[in-house]
Amino acid sequence: GTCTHSNVVLGAGAHSLKAVADYYNNIVESNEGNNERTETITWQGEPDITSHYLSAYSVQRGSAITAYYVINNPYAYSTNVGLGMSIRDPYGKIVDDVSGDKIVSAPSGSTTQSRTFYTPSSEAAGLYDYNLAIWSGAPGATTKYDETGWQLDALEVTATTTVTISGYVTDED
Picture 1 (cartoon, rainbow, N blue to C red):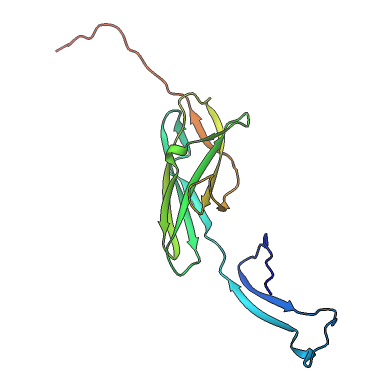
Picture 2: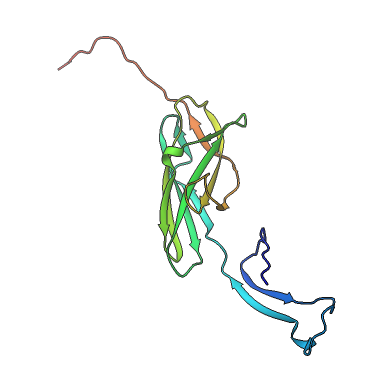
């Protein structure tokens, strides 16, 4: 027969799986010694973020920053990974820039990938938190592999300053 168990979460590494038939010995058999079997499987895990950084830690509202993800892909082959980013303003409002979300091909091993995040021009100036995440496909619409967690007060969003100079310009030679 077949037994399916879903919602099992395995960490990376070796795991033993044991199957037992006729657990209570209710069935009379000629060989009672072949009712169980144990097999070891090795799960490599999923891609994860091993390090990260931003191109700048201060940005004017309405401008862009680049987020860099150092991704470990444990598979023996390249896999697609979605790069997502959110910022959280000083009042707790979460801001996403889905236009900057992108899917990249992560080769086996460690690789650095990047995406751009545009801060809305309407955002208040202040210290913002940020969170980077990688997904099995489109960010927010597929399985989340890993995230950095909120990096507190790690991004300063500044107001744009416009300077107007008026008056006469003279050439004094």
